[in-house]
Length: 105
Image (cartoon, rainbow, N blue to C red; front, side, top):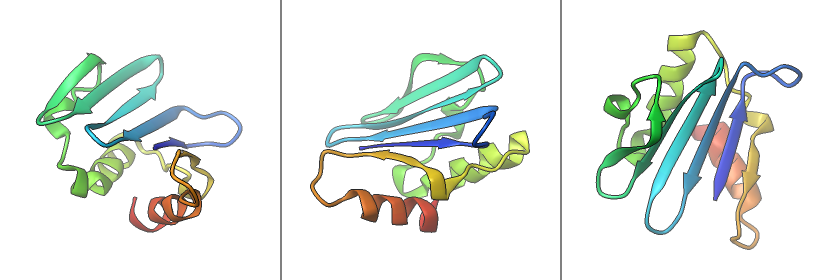
């Protein structure tokens, strides 16, 4: 399952991509040509780069909303949760995932 969040509909300045599957989860945050890409299996690790020094800020999955709020506070942005790009291979799950994004993140 993946969830993509942007801060603006017409001209996004920040993008957060969250991926979850059976064995790992991770996120990629992009802003102004810089990227942090973190993956977590047993422990967080940098996938390709960590321009924003987010490895040390990576929470347990259950605390993912705190990371989203941290990014919004740090960069003065607001992710458009109601307009999240949700992709999942689970049947009939997209609406439930979208509800989780809006209510929890």
